[in-house]
Length: 166
Image (cartoon, rainbow, N blue to C red; front, side, top):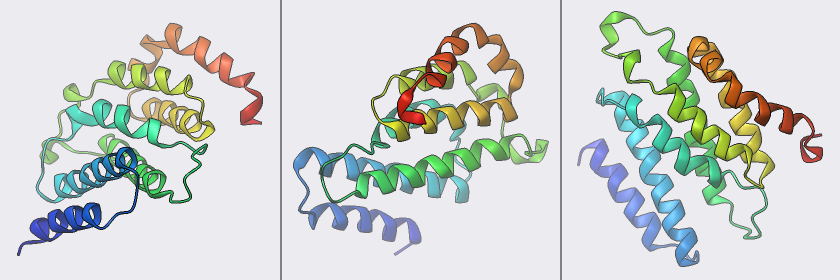
């Protein structure tokens, strides 16, 4: 079997042997598949860039520290995926012409929209991760962030007054 087949089988087997409730099982399985696709996208040069906002919209809400289930598998997978996405996007600014990455495919406005939604999430981890994404976007594409600053500022001001982030 190829490494890709091994990982595919691992995801399926992890899902089958789980004692998680059905909704949590779907969530962790989806996160495992996202992580798997992130891994193969770097080794197989797949075009991940246009999917960053969609992946973030699925992952950021899973960074929920209010979970009452002892098994924090979904949180661990979401943290791992978020870190990998951050590394991927941060590497964009260092990418050269030979890499095949076209920054035109990087939809900063769509990512900011996901961030705005995450700022309203009840989980502190989700809101802090969204704030970190603002920092990442400022490093990679400051012009696009500044173009959207009129939308971003109210969220940032609200976060400053958030007692939970203290």
